[in-house]
Image 1: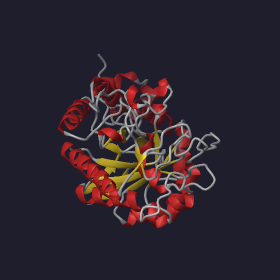
Image 2 (image 1 turned 90 degrees about the vertical axis):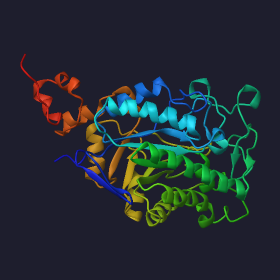
Image 3 (image 1 turned 90 degrees about the horizontal axis):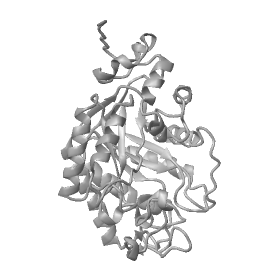
Length: 373
């Protein structure tokens, strides 16, 4: 049997969550919102992903406060209006798709907030151009030419933790299955982890135990508020000398496991423009393998895994428990079907799509029944 099409179960306080296969759609920012509100773009986008053959779909980085948005176009979940818009559009998308579990990634962008959208350069926006004052663990800018963020006080850290909890409670009220906390790609929790961005002199800076304090504080608070499947996305390395390391990532994953996490999702980079990354297929898989071996926590591998045979090999080698893909699903919205055809697996699809496959590949659809007329 294909490893990629073997079910996987997370054991969470609220109950077990079983995925039909090991394919996860990774979160992908759409930059399509106005003041954090989901709209018909998201309805279309989520409907496509829920019909992709993946066993779980992770919604994009969703800001827990207006100032936590990466850009003015980022999705939010900070009040009744944003919760109503997200919940309504997601419910509509789910009604038009097979019963696929959904995960939401919650985020605060920290000093990388107030940015232009990628196709407009992605640079920090000044208040006169629609931007806002950013925050971070220390008054250190992401790029040298940018204004420094406001260094958060302990009371402000506590308030941001409360924002994550409130967002998680809204997620729970929607009946969403899982939450991924974003501590990667140079956003706020990653900024606390990395010595490059965190040079505090208090209990939130300096030593490893101090630098992981804020992400663990957020995790523990969300764990108390949300009984579903809960994990964290972490940059396994900063790719910069003197930055956050894979050894620290592996130890943080172990601490998360002890705190009640169901998974960790291992990416890399994002905290410094000085990073030096050699992009090759599966370039982040060794990071996931190291974390899995040290922590024993179910681990997602992600990054330039684009072909079904690649994904199968990652799992067969024991490098990860699940494989996450993002842009591959934008290019091939039915990537999971293609993988099932190649690896003799099965997916669940809406009846209206059953006739699309040639007869020799119709085995991929569970319970398919196609008449002869």
